Image (tube, rainbow, N blue to C red):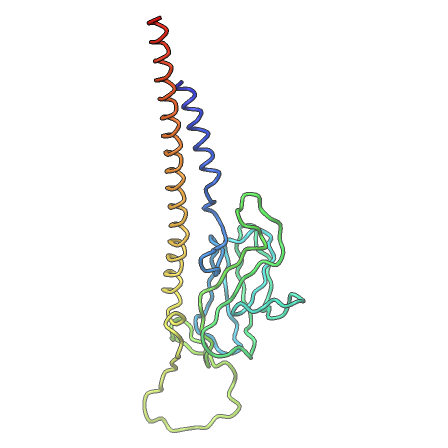
Length: 243
C-alpha cells in the first residue's frame, strides 16, 4: 500500500509540472510589448531629427534575423516598408548597433520595435523564434541631440546663415518638451522591467498554487476511497470470523 501511494503521488506531481507554463522566454500576453526575457536600450534619450541612434538587444534566439522598426511600423507586403535596419543576433543572444532616423520622423516621443523575421526554433524555448519581439525604451526626437542629460548639444543640421548678435547675458540652454517617460529613460526602463517581471511572476505563482491544490484534492479523494475499501474489507473479515 505505501508503495502504491508513493507511485500515485509521483505521477500526480509529474502531471502538474507538465501542465505548468514555462517560466523562461514567453510571449507577453498582458501587454504585447515585449517577449519575456528580452531587453533593449537606446542612446541618447534625446536625439536630433535625422540623428543616429545607438541600441543594444539581448535575450533573442541565436542567429535570428531581426528587423528594426520605429513605433511598431508595419513591415509591409514586401517586408521592407518602415524598416530602419536589420541585424542577425549573435551566439550569446545579443547585438549592439546603430540606426539613422529618417528625417520625416516627427518630433516627440518614439520607440524602436525589434521583431524577428527569420530563424530556427529552439526546442528548449516555449516561444517560436518568429514570435520574438521587443519594444525599446522611449526616446525623444527634438531640434538637438542631448548627451549625458544636457551636458552637450549637437545641432541636427548646420544653420544656413548666421546672424551675429551682441552678448547681453548668459546663453540660454536648450530645453526639450519630452514626456517624463522619455526624459527619464533610465528610470522608466527599470520601472518597466520591474513591472514586466511582476506581471509575469504573478500568473506563474498562481498557476503553481492551483496545481498543488489540485494535487492535494486528488490525493484526498484517493485516500477517502481507499479508506472505504479498507473498512469494507475489515467488515468482511469480521463477518467471516463470526461464521
